[in-house]
Image 1 (cartoon, rainbow, N blue to C red):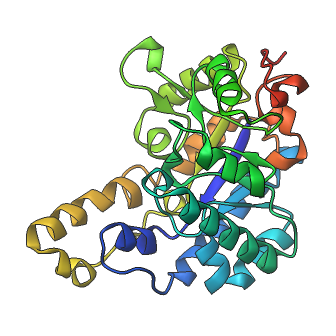
Image 2 (image 1 turned 90 degrees about the horizontal axis):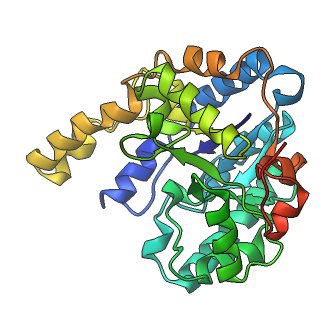
Length: 301
């Protein structure tokens, strides 16, 4: 089982999504506290192979907090890319995407002092209706982890149709609890809000379908004190209705279920620990035998 972290500043990114600013200062104390909490969790529960994990970091963090990126890398974790800003790529044109990918990679490599191989699109929002955005990713990075699916054959068909050749795509499993209801991804809000049985069922489904189970989480999910919450003053320019809505909605990410996440995650990992950094074995992380990374997917043993 793999664990990766989409390392982003929720407050900064929500203000950008809501049109409150283009960019601004990050909540650096909150990001540092969250990183130390995550690193301590890995030390306790990662096991001999999973003490170190992959952090998909936004480039804006490398710009404003290069010392934090350097610390994560110095502790032995993989620094991967989560775009420059936490924007929905499928709403952007290819020249913008290409520019932001390169900008983020350069900032992360300068801060970490190491090559940045991996990429994950914010919110998994990368255009899969045409190959151009994925080809832009493949031209800059060594692998991608932006493809939620419950079927490895679907991933293989997409790779062939997009002409991606040997470019590795490490999927996030998405399945329906006991075969019913909407598709749920293995991680994020789905993990912390739903009962433990849902996560165990998704992990079992993933393994049965040939996936290496791969959980993704965020810094704010390891905190329940509201450190990434936008204040009433920050929300005031939205108007009272929208400000009130987002005041309540933030609880979904910043408070509800956060207190119990670490215990739930530790139980899910179990005594076997985690598999470690994604870049250490791309074939294993893809959930298939080595020819999977070249597009001929077959189930893992």
